[in-house]
Picture (spheres, each protein chain N blue to C red):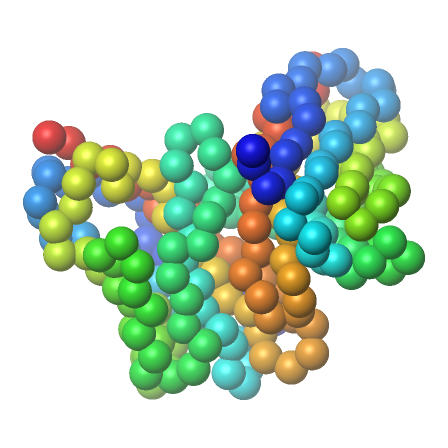
Length: 112
Length: 113
């Protein structure tokens, strides 16, 4: 089984809808991250969490919120989706500030 | 701030050809440098890394050397295979405390038989 899983893998939604993307990990890592990938822009950090009570904004947090329900779960919400949030979203984990990041398979989101 | 610049793709090579993907960076201090690979339909996975100047990271026949004098971390492989077709991301993490990882824009490699 995969160490970092994301649900759903694909999602189509309409402008203005609330949507939640979920991430679970079995690696036992404290640190979790949400990124979005856009063609020609690489990966950009949305939010990161060092533990359940420590959540921080990344470089592009506007329009997003997160919830760290447990060490193993980190959810990303779009409160009111807009078309320019159409992207590929990745969750990642790491075991420390200087450790390798492990990525989930991604969620492809289309906002109409 | 920190930044990573890598060559644009796509790069198309014949099987067994030599591969170079250029990556240069801007950062203060002594960042750690990485290459990640993304196979179709999958998330990124670490390919190799180097944490100090003149270090050489290597894995699966790929190599990259941390060159501080030229602020570069070019990825090379002597003989590519069809299975190497993927998108390759150069990345850095700054030094000192927690520093987020900064990714390049990715280079798509297609290897044809």
